[in-house]
Length: 294
Ligand code: OGA
Ligand code: MN
Image (cartoon, rainbow, N blue to C red; front, side, top):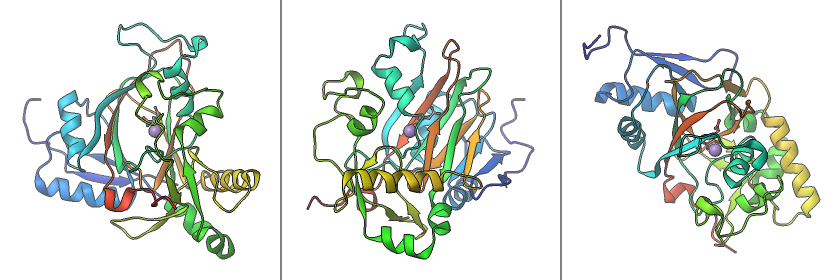
C-alpha cells in the first residue's frame, strides 16, 4: 500500500503480566504528526518501554525518530556480531567487540559510567537469529516500590561508583584506555561517576533503583559488603513481574527510558548473525549528571 495514512488507529497496548511496557501499532514511527507524538511521548513516560513492530526504520528515519526524544549521544551504532566487511565475528576469538557484546548480557543501564547517563535509546532489529538474542528489560520503579521500608531507608543515602572498566574486568576483559573503538567512550580515564542508588525521575517524579553491572564500590561500605548489597538488589529487582524479554522480529523497533529501566542482551548462537541498531538519546545534564566529586 502506498497510501500515507494508516487505516489502523494508533493503539497503545500495555504488556500483560508486567509492571511496564506497551506495544504501539497503527503508526509509522518515522512519520508522526504532533498529536501522535504527544500520545507516544506520554506513553513512553508512563510505560518506560514502547515496542513498535514492523517498522523497518531506515537509518535517517531511526535517527529522526530518536531525536524527537532529545539530542543524541550518538546517532546509530551497530550492536552486532557481523563485522563491517560482512563476515561473522568469531566468538572464540573473544576480541574487544565480542567482550562488549558479552558484557551487554549483564543487567545494566547505559552510559552511567559517563559524566551524563543516557536518557534512553531507540533500538531496532535488522537481522535476528532463529532463536535467542532477546533483549530483557527490568522496571526499576516497580523494584524500588517493592522494597520494604527499612531497605528503602537504608539505601536512600547511598551512592555507587559506575565504571565500564570495572564491569568489563569482571568478565576478564582487561581494559585499557586505548581499547579500540571504545577508547574515549566509556573506557576513559576521567573521574569515575558516583550516582545515588535511588534516582528520582526528572519528568515523572517517580523513584527508581539505579543499579546494574557498572555500579560498584559504595562509599562508606567495604568492597565485599557493597558488592553483596548491589547484587542482592539486582537479584530482587530483576524478577517477574518487573521483567520482560523481547523476542525480536526483523523490523521491530523499541524505545526505552534509560532513567528507570535496566536492560540486558541474552545469548544466541553466534554462528548466526544478529544485527541491531542503537541510537542513544543523551541525558539532560541537569538531571543525569553524576554527583559532584567529593
Ligand atoms: C545496548 C544493549 C542489548 C542487546 O545496545 O546498549 O545493551 O540486546 N543491547 O543487544
Ligand atoms: Mn546497553
